[in-house]
Image 1: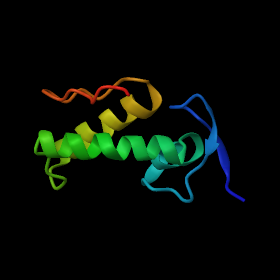
Image 2 (image 1 turned 180 degrees about the vertical axis):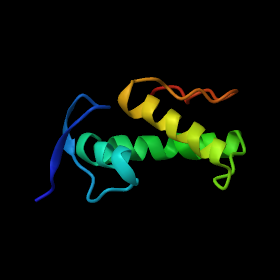
Image 3 (image 1 turned 30 degrees about the horizontal axis):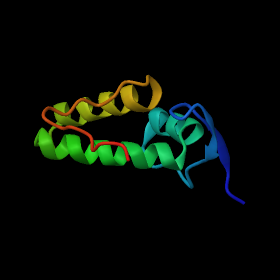
Image 4 (image 1 turned 90 degrees about the vertical axis):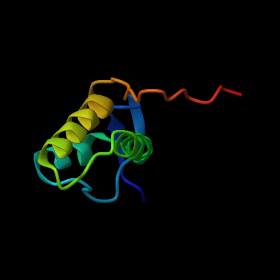
Amino acid sequence: MARTVFCAYLKQEADGLDFQLYPGELGKRIFDNISKQAWADWMKKQTMLVNEKKLNMMNAEHRKFLEQEMVNFLFEGKEVHIEGYVPPAEK
């Protein structure tokens, strides 16, 4: 049986992550409070950020920036702004 969590991003009960995907206290917070769907949504945004801003994960400042964007997106309800990106129209 899948574990469920009250997802801080979706604001509802949803399937939780299978294991902790991020290290440390923040990783525990994500594991306890973020659903699989919310994490998948973040992964899409993260990929866009890394590509559009040409982030280098070997650079500590870039990792810190990405972590802050992740917290903003998952826990504070702030949308990730990617310059020049226009979401596709809803059908």
